[in-house]
Length: 86
Image (cartoon, rainbow, N blue to C red):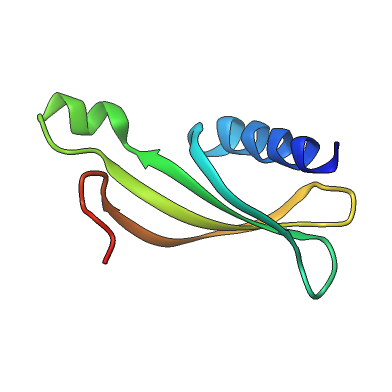
């Protein structure tokens, strides 16, 4: 299944280069070709635990090419995990 392969590639990329994804909230075909995804990552988990702070959750926009390989990513937002979206 194509989406499972994309999600696995994103997970592997983030585990190797940034941090394990918390959630992959969207995967869609990009208008310019390839795919786009939205990924949530818990930022600096150990640091936040050490100082008894709420975890920070980063939201990333991820671009993949036609071969389902991550070609770029950009953090769109960072927030406390407990903050309710409005």
